[in-house]
Length: 112
Length: 114
Image 1 (tube, each protein chain N blue to C red):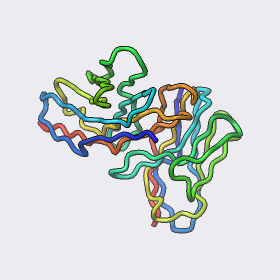
Image 2: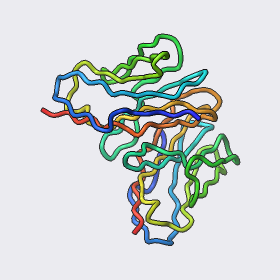
Image 3: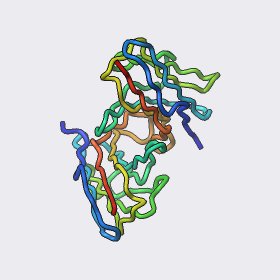
Image 4: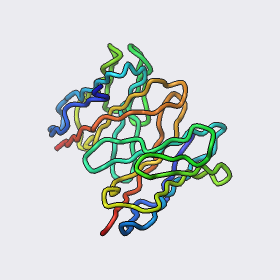
């Protein structure tokens, strides 16, 4: 069965610093990967997705992720974070039958 | 478009009570699902539906029931609430289940069972 592991449960970072949120997935023939963001007391919003093509995927709010097949990773990056980026971030893999399989989530806390 | 709409947003139940979480989408999506979110566990799939009249179990279906009488609606029923069902529930929908597509989420329903 496919699975996703987010390697950090919490990531504190200062404003304007770069950040990387790590995500590893279990290997499969075809892999479709997603990053979602959840702001406090809100639903999940799609940040970006990898379906095929370029391994560097750009998303909303200045985030990007790189699909690395050899390392089975899909890490999320932002070169300079803002206070407003404070949220929980979820990595997910698309499974058979349209199901999304989520990682445990990473809480990003941006401090002034 | 309202997207995916869930009601209620907050609910407190007593152990043993039953209730229904409502979910509606106006995007004509064939695929709908319910997830629960618990700290440190991400989101886990409860039930899903690939079209009207078709439902199936996800990872954590026990204690929940669903039906899909129309394309738009996908209610989740708690048959006899237990404290272990205290959680945040998300309804989601997508235009396809057979190929990868963006899944859209509702705003969530916070349920407390006392």
